[in-house]
Image (tube, rainbow, N blue to C red):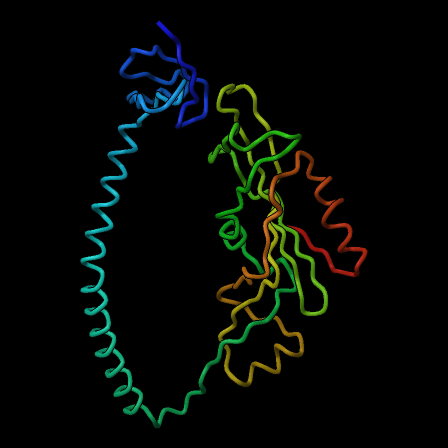
Length: 259
């Protein structure tokens, strides 16, 4: 019997089977595959590995898409109809209170100049997608996965100068080798956001206070994601990150604060 060598379509590990086998199983990810043969091809290309779970999932996804495409237009029509009703009610309510003397509030955006303005919850939310590609000391991300239980916001650094700022949220992540659980690496992954601003809902007479430097509590913070970037990969040494990315900003006259 001839032995055929292939790569597992699921995890990429080596996988072998006999030329008369109808199915095989990966020793690493334990996924089972059906073996199909195409006699029109030559050599090992005759054999194809079919994942029954993936085929079933694709069929289920297609059915879901069809159901959504049928229901969504009806939902949109209902929401638009409700929107017209709400809009009409708000116009009526506004006209009924036209004599109200309360000042209209406005939302203004002010660059964050002090990291103390950002709560720990804000800083944690900024790291939802901070796990970028793992490439420290030449290791590839398809060999390691990060452990959700052992990651944390290690340090937040704000660099501020002339109404412009950079927020670096450094995520400390434990990566574990797929094939060797004892092979673990701690990586510091910095995520850079540019132009962090506070959304302040204020009345007209408070605007002068803000422009004069008064501190007003902000209910929310906005990130200019179009101007933000992820520092792909990570640093095995946090101090090296500071040397590469933070110290040059100090030289340029940015005020640096940490939390």
